[in-house]
Image (cartoon, rainbow over all chains, first blue to last red; front, side):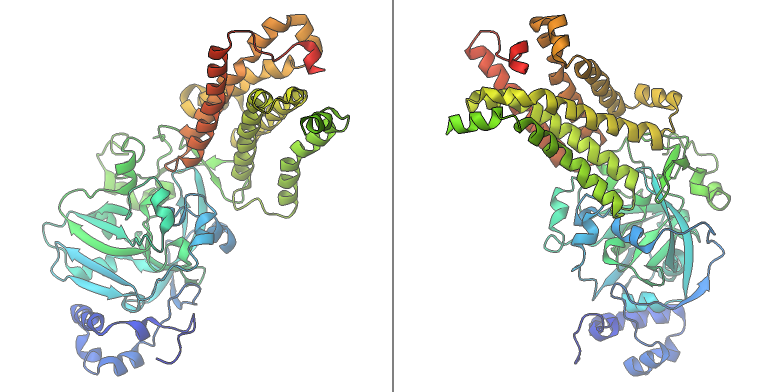
Amino acid sequence: MSSWKEGELTYADVTPKSVYLNRRQILKAMGIAGTVALGGKAISRLAFPPATANAGTKLNVAVKSPFSTSEKQNTFDDVTHYNNFYEFGTDKSDPSRNAGKFRTSPWTVSVEGAVKNRAKYTMDDLLKLVPLEERIYRHRCVEGWSIVVPWIGYSLNTLLKLAQPNDKAKYVAFESYYDRDQMPWGEHSGIDLPYVEGLRLDEAMHPLTLLCVGMYGESLPNQDGAPVRLVIPWKYGFKSIKSIVKIRFVEGEPRTTWNLYAPREYGFYSNVNPNVDHPRWSQATERRLGEFSRRKTLMFNGYGDQVASLYTGMDLKKYY
Amino acid sequence: MRKFFSQLLTSKWSKAFVFLACLTPLAYLGSRAYNGRLTANPVEYVQHFTGDWTLRYLLITLSITPLRKLLNLPDLIRFRRMLGLFAFTYVSLHFLTYLWPDQGFEFSGMIRDVAKRPFITVGFLGFVLLLPLALTSTTGWIRRLGGKRWQALHRLIYVIALCGVIHYYWLVKSDHRLPLLYAAILAALLLFRLVSSLLKPRPAVAASPAALR
């Protein structure tokens, strides 16, 4: 490779050969291996031009999602300078200051556990799996603030289906990248790292659950969870795990970071629910960034029509 | 050297200087507001800013007595009332940023919060306890109450500072370094008083009306 200038390096350029082999397994799983894998890299590149996914790279968004809200979006500046990403510091302004040099390339996401097809995906693989969608979601933090963000990605179930989970797969566990050298602030965050999260299988398979690779037309900024994260719009923000490296299908309810830290305050489900308060503060209202007064918080953050049926018969005060 | 400091502290400009110095955080906040640099969540920023400075002024106020003794600069007492009143000013703004944007001046919602949320309960308690101290901060009130009773009342500042630190500790999610730092400073300041009162069992020098002139 001749050019190592920042911004020009592509995932295709740096992907190790072993991982490329893996990609072929994925394509095989998709049933299109014959058309692409044969010619190897050259044909693959013709079919899928290499996508650069360092933060700030323009992404081609082919689909506008019917799930999108028409509410006023927050500014890019707000969403990139007001972050909870404890690996880069606990103040909201820390991640934008500290995550700049975070190396997100090369990157692989390992899919494992109770599945037929275990695989490792490069970012290039993930970016080309299916056409990218823009989804404008409300995002509600457990702390009582909210934003509206045009995320980019596709339903997580696209990836999960490729893995073909077996009968033992009842939950999906997720793990974030953690490197003390790159994230020295994590030591003082008070929470155990690497960050782990989890969803029930049906929640993970729900079309609203977004595997997110970008926002505002670009790949994800480092402080917003580059290069790939979840966005689960009906749950409190901390469920939407950032900088994912591992996705594991499991039989039992996975351990989750904030639940481990304070089980009474942060439940496994953590659905947005104005009727169930955090022990220390009310969840009945929220402040939309950019607004002066607080507004009423909506059940399931306003996504009840889509997701309420997942929780039929469950006492949401008990399963908070 | 001490004479020089003493002269500096008792000069007629010193109070004006300290007063202006105490206003600089507010000026800084104003300039950030003017330049649109109150972050993506301005209400929260102002809440945290005024809360931080309330705690700082409480601790600075509480450090006057130890500093007077340790540095042998009794004239520092001239600034204590002003510093305490600045703590009250910042906590009033802090309370206002809660009552207005958060509660929309709805006292029913506020009372529910105060009753239900321990961190708000303890913060509100600190604010309420500070009110009589601010009201009786004048020389006239010291005379009316009498030095002894006035001093007893104003010992509430220990409880108030404790309320402030607990309020901060309880609202933080997981990184408790800063609240613990404030707690450690407060503990040191209170410990100084405990030790010095044990060593010299005589009334503290603090507040005769003359000293507060």
